[in-house]
Length: 180
Figure (spheres, rainbow, N blue to C red):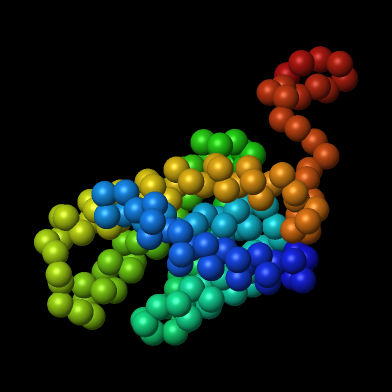
């Protein structure tokens, strides 16, 4: 990963998340573009770079909240490590894969944050409303943005230091000019 490009990009992303995400709120749910970008780097960059990048984005997000420092950084780091450990089993360049992986990651992160906030603070809303509104709707909304963000970031992979594979999936394997 090209860190000289990544750091200003992460700062721009943090600014966009804090300034624009509240304005595109839908039924009380905001998209978590930071998580969608963490999923992008976890799917396409080397595992070490994805983990460091996820922690940097999470640490920046921690500085924008009044919550304990390190909570978001830890959750983004764990999500990046989880995705990098299973990413070879997916067709990463498909929009459906990007949507589903981001949806699963967002649901895990939002559920963990919901349990954390309900156990630490006085619950402000009923449990079912919090799960449907905060976890499910917010996760789907975040995942809906993922294919767009991934396509935008993959339009310049060498800018980020991510190499494109030199092969493609054709649906069949040729062995000695016979289709298998």
